[in-house]
Length: 401
Image (cartoon, rainbow, N blue to C red):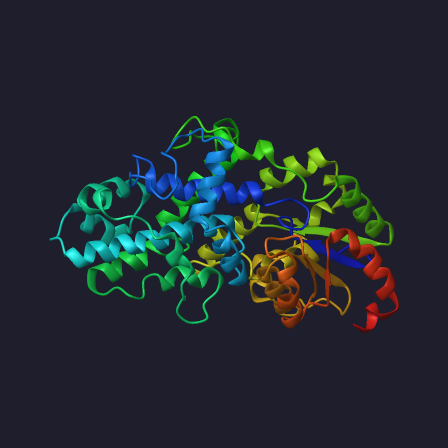
């Protein structure tokens, strides 16, 4: 690590960039899987519009309001340390799919091609239209129960342990199907991620980034409407003050590189950060694949695992195995500050031995303050522009924190 006073590592969404378009994309993903004729093809009710690849802004607002229950679902999952918006979309759809499987198991249809294929690989997006045809009930009487998602989740599971809880009520062949389907590494999860990316990036950028056509063409892309969370001049001023005092600035985000670089370049703050301390989803994904080859098992390194923060603090030359173990990597006291808006950020900071600054610009707003304080945040600030002043006032104490 270069000879900085220390490092301040920022999460992006809810700290510098807004998450509104990501949440819209997650809601649209669930909507498409439930109501698109190429997937389950249900008849929309409860104020939801018919499926279209170009919903207008009013339709998007309605879809998000219904599916996320006026954003209560987002708040619940944030509290349970779900940091990825791909996981947000996956969990919301997987929960409804769990209800469909209950309906299917209750009527106990005989062995068929769908059951056989689902037992082998789990339910994939391509199997959803087969499931819809198998169940005559959904189109006539079965409807998703979005409010049920807010009910009690068994145990104290959080983060990527949550999907596996959806398999608990099943037995026999349905348990086998559920375990293969409700997994953070399943084909369904990958399909949900791809559909989300289609909505967020739009057809043109999706093809540029992934060098392949989307499953469903014609989507515009919500990234075009993304905005900074705060006045960009105030963000830039805060970052410049911190670097001027000798702090190295890093990023640890669940965004892919392309979704980070484009907006930060447009905002004029990309060069405020140390390039060796910028860690994105792409870095996490590559490390998971590398370690999977080393250990012959699937490993999850997304937040609240501290992997991305450790890589940002120590630099990208830190080996994946070392970052996985975390052995001997605790920063000196006061040398590493994590700035985030979620419990996933706080839990990761706490595990690596960094100090946490919670900001109230995320989804939880001011309600997050008490939660952060109880969980051990060193400071809770209104937004990231207050950090220079906070560190200046605390400067005499930093080495003793």
